[in-house]
View (tube, rainbow, N blue to C red):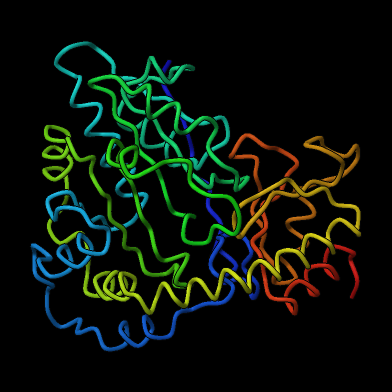
Length: 343
């Protein structure tokens, strides 16, 4: 079964930057000011080191892995694209079509990249050449179902990729993988949301410990200089004790804000799905059902006209639902006024 997908995103749109963007899950406590200072100081007159030697060593030391396992990417989405193409090429000589398994509700770029790479979608992970996981997941912010079981069941030749875009802002729960399990999967790490600097596109992957063939292909598919100097500055700021101490403090603040935001929404008649992350899904009726007569599109458009942007979840397979990021109390109050249609 081939995949046809279109791309839908939150954030800046044809109307410009929303006054209150709750659609892209950026850290409401951000931005991290030392990273901002590093971005201002970045010397854009020159190329970065084409091998990114010091950055790779820093990231490898931060994660306690060999530098050979670090793969830099211009963004998480670029790494999703590159890994999908690499996985398709790995099996192209042995059979006609490589296959992919996707979570039921997931970031649309997994399907888009799979379609571009010619991967066929299968409905059982054990049948797939490439398996995608995201924990906490998007859009619902929950644990990936049976993540540990899927890792244990991996067979030779299968590739599993764990997208950890939202791990730094996990507000409850824990990843159900130990270090041995983490060494068996690819991991994509995208710090810009956690740092409150989504405009800087920079990411990296950590390859499995025993990876060889696919790693070489993923490297070969990379463009020259996937990161500019600003991406380098962001990742250098990220892989530090100070940044993660700041993130720890952010998580404590976000927990309090999240509880307040959920309470306000529920009191106003919105259902809120459980979430471990700094975002969650809401609907206008109980459970995951659409309220008869409620026009989600009109609601989103009205909010956008008032400078507030939420994420339509239709592209995630959840029509009549919206994803909303945790915001500061002042922004929460504006959201509630807008939802009530107050002037």
